[in-house]
Image (cartoon, rainbow, N blue to C red; front, side, top):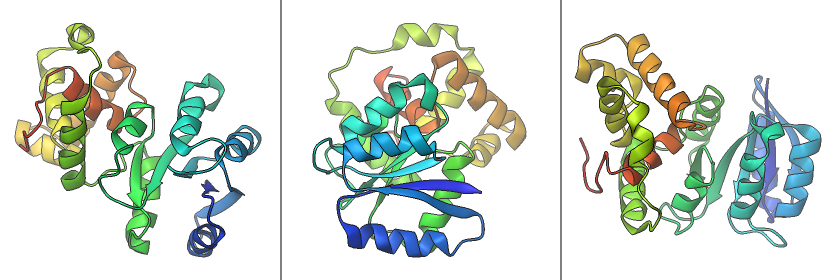
Length: 221
């Protein structure tokens, strides 16, 4: 059972998500929150698998709440998915750098939302390839953070190659075809790379690929 916490200051939005998710046999709405502070308290108390977190909320916005969740070692198994009204929300890149596993626009089709939630629980980044490439490239180009090239020294040549392919938005299956290896081998390389770099999930690996200069904005594979 996938336990989801809904954090949005609009009660109608929460009600819509609750009705959709509650009708699924493998998903349970563990709780609701109307602001960031309430969301934090609920996460610590309920320990959901996934938080659907609105970016703009009173008292504490979704971005700050996400940082506090992902910085808390006791909450390392909680995934955060940001909710936004626009695909290219100015805060989305920062949210992913802060540890969010991805984002969804609020008018996402129901089937896509359900597929996405199940995917993020399995450890996949919740970012469609097309949006990932546009958004991460745009905001990584603006990032003023220092490059993380030194941390890549721990990676093997193949792991760097795999990381670059993750960075341009390829799935494990696409990476496997590109490198002529099995999907399991590709998944193993991705997992080892994440462990070596301390990335929480695939989304952060994409960000690191750009920030380290391994992938440059505009490379679409």
